[in-house]
Image (cartoon, rainbow, N blue to C red; front, side):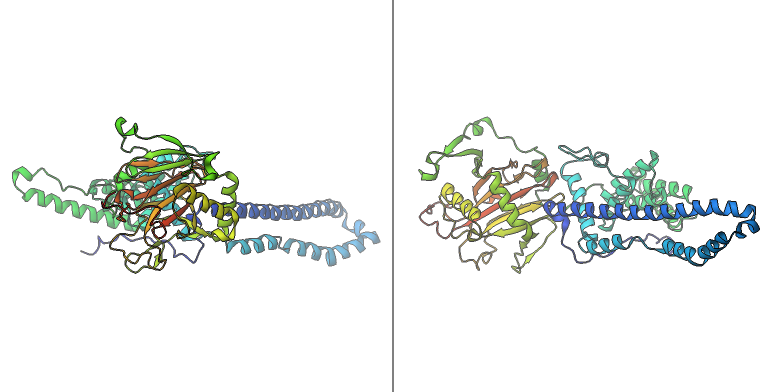
Amino acid sequence: MIWYILIIGILLPQSLAHPGFFTSIGQMTDLIHTEKDLVTSLKDYIKAEEDKLEQIKKWAEKLDRLTSTATKDPEGFVGHPVNAFKLMKRLNTEWSELENLVLKDMSDGFISNLTIQRQYFPNDEDQVGAAKALLRLQDTYNLDTDTISKGNLPGVKHKSFLTAEDCFELGKVAYTEADYYHTELWMEQALRQLDEGEISTIDKVSVLDYLSYAVYQQGDLDKALLLTKKLLELDPEHQRANGNLKYFEYIMAKEKDVNKSASDDQSDQKTTPKKKGVAVDYLPERQKYEMLCRGEGIKMTPRRQKKLFCRYHDGNRNPKFILAPAKQEDEWDKPRIIRFHDIISDAEIEIVKDLAKPRLRRATISNPITGDLETVHYRISKSAWLSGYENPVVSRINMRIQDLTGLDVSTAEELQVANYGVGGQYEPHFDFARKDEPDAFKELGTGNRIATWLFYMSDVSAGGATVFPEVGASVWPKKGTAVFWYNLFASGEGDYSTRHAACPVLVGNKWVSNKWLHERGQEFRRPCTLSELE
C-alpha cells in the first residue's frame, strides 16, 4: 500500500559564504549601525517619493481648476489667443514633462546603498545559528516557549517578543535538524498565539502540518491523528494531511489487531510511544553541566567553605605589589581556583578589545585525530590572538600574570581574546593535552599547558558562567577580575577535575581573554613532586 507514504521533508535554502555574525555579539553590533544606515536611506527615499507625489498633486489640482473653467465654454476659452497658445504648449510640452516626472525612479539611491550593504548581511547559516542558540538556551536554562516568546528573560534592558511567524521559523529550524521535540514545542507556541487572535502571515494549516508530523515522529499516534483531523477541518482538500490520516488510521488498526491477538494480561496494553524529550547526545555530563549553568550546582560543605579565604597577595614580595597588593579570593579548593579582583582596568580592557575586534575569527578546536583546526557547534565564539610586542598594554598584562603566578610567560601562548555569540558557549573540555594526544602542542615545543589564566572583561546580565562539572564548581563573570588554576599536577600529570565549560550566554555580551602557560621554563618555578597526584 503506497498511499500512506506521503510525509514530505521541508528543507531550508543552502547557505552561502559568510562571516559568521551569530558567533560574536561584539561583531553583531556592527549590524545595528548597518541597519540604521539603511533606515536613514529608506526614509530619504520615502521623502523623495513624497516630494514627487506633491509635485504631481499640485499639477493635477491646477489642471483640474483650469479644465473645469474651460469645459464650461470651450469655444470662448480657446477664442482667447493666450489660452490657445498655452493649451498647445501644455499638451505638446508640459504633459511630456509630467510623464517624465511620473516615470522618474526615486529609488536609485536606496537600491544602490542596499546593494552595497547586502554583501555584509548575515545569511541563512547565521539565521539558523541564532535559532539554534535560542533552542540551546531554552534547554540549558529550563525556559518554556512562552517565556522566551514574551521576552521575559532575566536582566534584559530591551524587552522583545516573538511573533507567531518567529515561533514557526524556530520550529522549522528544529524540524530541518530532525529535532522533533523542539519542533513540537515551537509549533504549539505558534498555534497558541494564532488561537489568541494574533494577526500573522502564517496560517494554522501550515503549523498543524509540521506539528502533527513532529508528534507522530515522537510516537504519539493518537495526538498526531487528532491534529491531522483538526487540520482537515480547516482545509479538507489538503493532500498530505489526507494521506497521513489514512496512514495513521492504518497503523492504529494494525496495532489494535496485534493487541486483540495478544494474551489476556496484555490485551489492554497499548503500544508504548517513544519517550518525548531532548535527544540523547554525546555529552555524558550534560545534566550536571546545565545544572551548574543555572546555579544549581553542588553546595560546598561548611567545613570546606571554612578553608576558603580572601587575602592580599604581593606576588612573593614582588616590588610592584608590595604597596598595592592584589586582592585574591578562593573560589574552590580542589582543584584550587583563585579569583583576582580589580586586576585589569576598564581602560586596559577597552584597548585589548579594540586591538582584537578587527581580527576576531570563528573560534576553532584542534581535531584530536588529524590535528587540524576546525569549527564545531559546541564552541560558539570568535577569538583573536594578541602578542606582547605589538602593544605595551598587552605586554604589561603578560608581565602582571607572570608576577602574580610566579610562572614564566615567555613560553606561554599569546593572549587569546574571545567574544561569545548568541547563546555563546564552549561545552566541557580540557585545556591540557591528554595522553592520547601526545602531539597536541608538539609544534610549540613548550610542553603541555600547565595552567590557565582567564580575564573577565565584561559583566554578563544572565548566564555565561565558567563551570567545572567534575567537581560542581561555578565561577560567574565579573568585569575586571581574573581566575587562575593549574591544569597539571606538579608531577606533570593532567588534573582531570579541571574539565570545564563556558555556559551559554543567556542575556548580555561576554568578553574574556586568557593566557595558557606551558611547562617549559617552569622547572625551577614549580618543581616536580614524587607523587603523581600532587
